[in-house]
Length: 599
Image 1: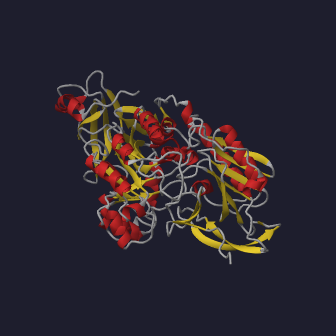
Image 2: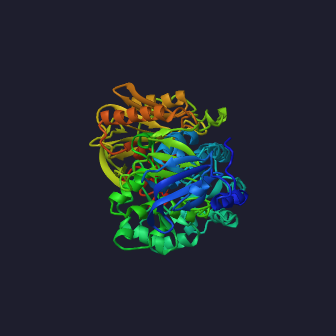
Image 3: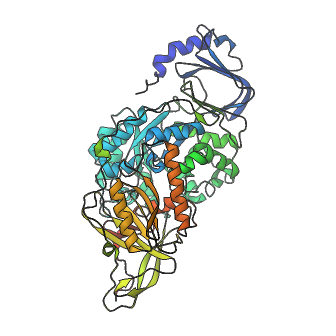
């Protein structure tokens, strides 16, 4: 495990001595243009001196801090910006363990992450959270864990592998890397005063930690006010300017996300750029990024560049990805700015708009240069219990995916999950489909979706219909990444291939597989909880890229369609989803029938 950074209190004697010139610094960066996110200004010709992994001196001339063994980096007029911080994210969405995720994002300048491992919590419970937490603490950058709040995310509408209790939350609040409660997705529970949800919030607040929010409803009336009264301190589910404004006005930090498939910054940042709201109440985050995005496009540097391209002042955008986030989690004196006492996380870049990440320092140590990682990201020894989590109960067959029509019908009206490109919400659609030999058949862009139970080996399969992917011909795609319950989601136009794809994931212990014309054309193995791989990020990204190409070969034209696929069972985001218990009308938070006209 990495040696933990000294506390400010323990480091203070040396920090003072270095700043006063009585002792030499470990590192001095000189001749830079310092971006001060505290005052929102650029200070030309400023230097920084580092000791004990923290900034000791920040000012126009640090020559008095240089000794014979001090390492000196010449900034040569480049900008010094704080290491970037992701305020809300799920490591599992990258298909990588914390170590490999860190290795992927460090070269992009991310030096701090606030992560909610509720994906693994649904599969392995508190033990899974502990494994993520422990590997996170081993990394050369700062990864703080938010204790998951909702497993299941919607009690009564889905069944998970494990459930999280208020007692689990209270225990986790004593762990060293736990910074708060993960997103409170069960917003109807909070609104209706559910004792379990309120007890989790209370345990977090008693521990003096931050409660994460998740209000996935367009209703900004009384229900939203009731949710805000429950205690969530932030929310990342806004998709419109009015959402961002409403959250800020209720004292919540509005988190604007740009993930692999969520493009919610542009529609909300106008609350700052045009309406003039105080930007210190806004935070940038990713939420979900798959490995291909991380390797090829970036992480928080990508989000900051996007915010700037949407009209945000570069200094304001940087505040939203550094000091605003640190302040929100009560860590302003520890992170988020280049100022005395803070962890020495700094990026050297030659341009504030395009943000090339040329040199990354974390805790005073060079961790990446010119896109190449320079440090080790240690791995946990993941136990076998975390690698054996796909339990189908039987070998599935095409018959398990048949949807039998009401007797005597030649056609039926069915409810259809409508995928929306680049958005988390779905549409609740209907379609009239033909019945052939008593079985409903998809047509006209409507294909089948199935949820295969994989936690308790029940052999159960729930079938429905989905549209929007554009699949053609004979195909199927199956994934054990199925937020948040993480059963198995299968989408296809051919029932035999849907069965074959499902069985294949049972064989390999989880992952994603794409089939076309009777053969497997792509496979991403995710042996840890059926969610992650501990293989190198580059290898996983290459397989994920092949998966995306295979989906396109099956006719899919959506941007990052796999993210849409993986959320089809997320029963806390409107409007229509599928769970192991049936179709879910999320607008009403109740199960609904597949057939729209059974009379």
